Length: 113
Image (tube, rainbow, N blue to C red; front, side, top):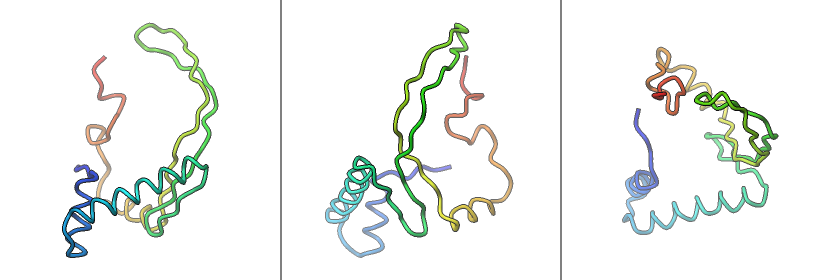
């Protein structure tokens, strides 16, 4: 499993448009900044064929710390939620086999305790 970074996106845009990386870097930065500003305003961002980013509310809750068996309060907060498009969902569903836990990023069972 690879990881796409902003730098990778700049190179993909440069290859697709036959432009140098400098203007592509500015374009990618402008898109990212525009998405961030829209989410800060509470707007949703729809990227046709990819999905929708929107601001969601997570209510306050209590979680247990496994090392100490102590309950701690987790405050309510806003977060960015991504809802994949139908095409992306279908593409992911058609992947051969299932991801193993070792391939899933941030899997709690993979962490050393």
